[in-house]
Amino acid sequence: MRAALNEWDWSKVLTLVVAATGISQLDLANLTGFSQPHVSRLMNGTAKCFDIRAINRMIDGLGAPRIFAGLAPALAEDGVTVAVSPQLEVSPMRRRALLATSFALPIAAVLGTEERPRVVTHGHARKIRSLLPDLYALDDQVGGAPVSDVTQWCLGEVDALLQTAEYSEAAGQELQLAYGELAEMAGWLDFDTGQISSAQYHFGEALRTAQIAGDLNLEVLVLASMIMLARHRGRPREAIQLSQLAQRRARGWGSPRLLSLLTAREATAWAQAGDTGAARTAMTRALHTFEPARSDEDPVWLSFYTTAELTAQQASVSSYLNQPAQAATKLRSAVHALEPQYTRNHALYSARLALAHLADGDDRQACVALAPVLPAYTNVRSGRAIAHLGECLAGLQQSPVPEAKDLIEQATALGLMKAA
Image 1 (cartoon, rainbow, N blue to C red):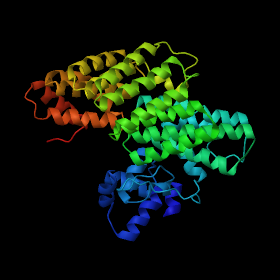
Image 2 (tube, helix red, strand yellow):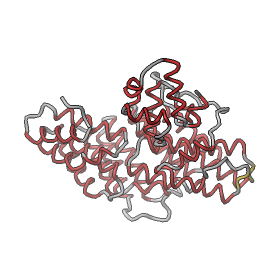
Image 3 (cartoon, rainbow, N blue to C red):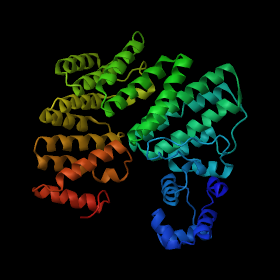
């Protein structure tokens, strides 16, 4: 069974399950979420399955550990991630199949579709690091588990190269930084999908790598992400300390936009802690420091920090300070200022705007804010965005305004909520 999972041989996997348990194809369909005819085609080999999301659904439905198929492990009920066995090799066939998925196309040209290289040159190591902008772009578009699977797979590949390949000192430095940057990205995607324990682990890996390599840019990036995690965990004082540490580490080399981001996140943490004066002081500094135009001094990961994101940070401050009308005004401006490639943030900001209207008692405006982005939610995989959408829909289910009924019907038709 392990060999069949590792090879993505679904005909053999399903045949072995039936032979061992005696369950029917209809039972398999109910477990995996596929139709019975599709299960039949998988079993007789006339259908293939290379889509990561579908594979995760099938493996989870069968109760098998994802790591046996070489994918990112699911979290156990206690939040602990099951470690991947270093002896479990990824077969060339499954490697090719994974890299053929739409999410991984930019990666295939760099990491390849065959066996891992035995020698990594400095140029190849630099190309591996160049994968990050592609992953950032995918995160901006949809976020969530599909991008996380590919990122964690890349992280495992780079770790394997560090342990088994031959490389020069310069190439090793590049590989080490690639590992740290991918670990941070994996942590961020864990956070975005609600995998908090896994996010903590990956951020710790990334921070350790940054400190070993003496790379301040990576260290500040990790600290900036850890601020968000601390806030999510309801630890605003920790978030304040992380913000201030990141600002100290960026002093002397950080661009104005980087310093503005760190200060804005400090302001939001102060607001979460209930300190209105400190929050406003920090946000004033963030606004004063911010430069709208992107600069060559900005790190590549900072591309998301636009006028829209800064305005959304101001909205977060207002929300924490129980000022829903001000939060709604800022979020409306943030939605209008977003560039089109930020699909995930457009959905996220719109849901936050709807929640601000609900908190202000304006159900009709909440519907106006949410209705245009409902179709986008069929593609967005961000756990944060989906959670906000769920809050909105739950808050509108009992609303007396006719727009709420129309919105609930639209969400149900799109498969975003179950029919009553």
